[in-house]
Amino acid sequence: MHPTFSKNERLHEFRLIRTLFAEGRVFSIPPLRVTWMRFKEQSGPLFQIMISVPKAIHRKSTDRNIIKRRIREAYRLNKSILPNEGSTTVSQISFCITYTSKDILTYRAIQDKIILLLRRLKEECEKDF
Image (tube, rainbow, N blue to C red; front, side, top):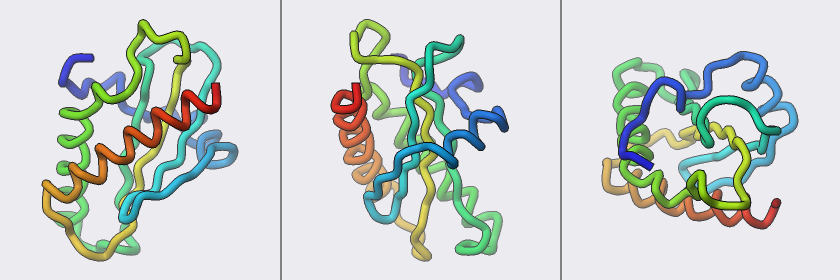
């Protein structure tokens, strides 16, 4: 995987998001909560991601934006942890990362959590297959 985060890697289709939150599996690595789901073969990228920082927790949009930027950058640089197209255990997987803490963590702390999160997601995907 290239260290990019293109538009087609973003989860934005309302139908998929609704299905993800209705039927998806959840695990947590505080301050991040991941809701993920394996979808049947569809066109598009292997992984689609959505990043959410609730307005109820962080009222200022600048705070929400800085957290989302940090998560996005940490994901972009470390998404090579996830299986690639050559793996036999891969189908399309969509997931949402929700930031649940009232504190704004540093980039380094968020990156460490994202690495743990991606390793756990990889294990869950392989176990589920």
